[in-house]
Image (cartoon, rainbow, N blue to C red; front, side, top):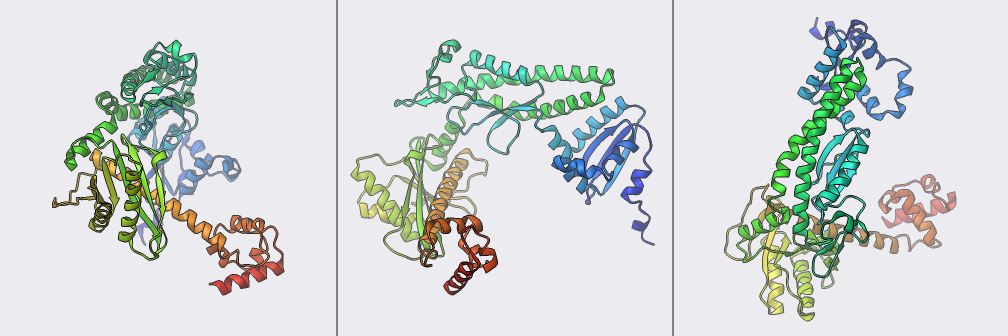
Length: 493
């Protein structure tokens, strides 16, 4: 008989648990530990997850409901006392980093401080959720009042911005941080350059990092005191914060050290200058991308970055006018010519670097446009997405930079933004065309009913596959009109 048939079921394991303190390890069907918990009585605590009436209680606790649904096996470690279980639970969480312990640690009880490095003037804001983005996070912090007082003190001490401010950019490139009395209270100059402000931010990060370590020591002391008083649930909550704060400090240490040395975008621009052999850092970059659906709705986008950041007032989008077909090269030639013909007419400067989404074909098309304009092109490269290869317009060999190269990362952000902007415009045109053609040709269908149809089905494609009964569910449609529309759309396929 196979060994699996002798293996006790989950229910049998739960029934056999001892009425003693210990730690339990919940596992999924692949044998992975997904949750570690402690209990004064293993039998009572673990059995509570699987009681028949617990389903009703879990309706408003989606994380716990998801956890219970994934449990297929469990192990236990019995210990002598509840304090011993508390310490062992923390050790095992740190060792295994189970999925659901991490989720609970980052729950809404605790605040984080977020610093968004994509902002030209990064601000210290509060959040309860950590995202996978380019921001830096400090925390979590269990004492929200103390944290808010600390941030207010940090604003006065270092002249940095919190989440309640909206700085204004001045014509000379500097910024006015505050438009009220807070500028006088802080004692710091209210008009600053981005570089000066980031130096303040670096000092504030070091300060907050130090405060975090002070709070970590205080939390450890409080956790031990709670455990000594046998307040084990409160001690466990504090232990979760200690573990999360330790992880955060490990992640932010390198950032705090590096941030004070160099602005991230300065590093990217200088490294790009060196990699491409430019005379100076490319402060103004423009990138072109072509978007179409099988040769239809051909459009192009151009995005502009200034000092490594999106400059959305200079974004442009183009509908292709000179032809109707699937020809990316011809489209690139058209939009590059239109863009720089206009800059020449307006006597405006060209960007420091032009980037094309593509390879040699796109570069040849752009050079052809500049030849027709009878003007020398600015620095120009293509970025071929398959291997993120940089293509030059001259005899230089293609260049592949390391994937963590700051200059390449800047080019990727520029290219991805151009791609997003082009696709958005393409989708708008398609939506407009659909509204103007298919539904407009159906007699007796006004704007209100058209809007209701699109809101109900989401797209013409889904509407085409709908039955008359499904169409009749749309406000303003009866069975007869629904059947007529179904027949009309079928004939239009």
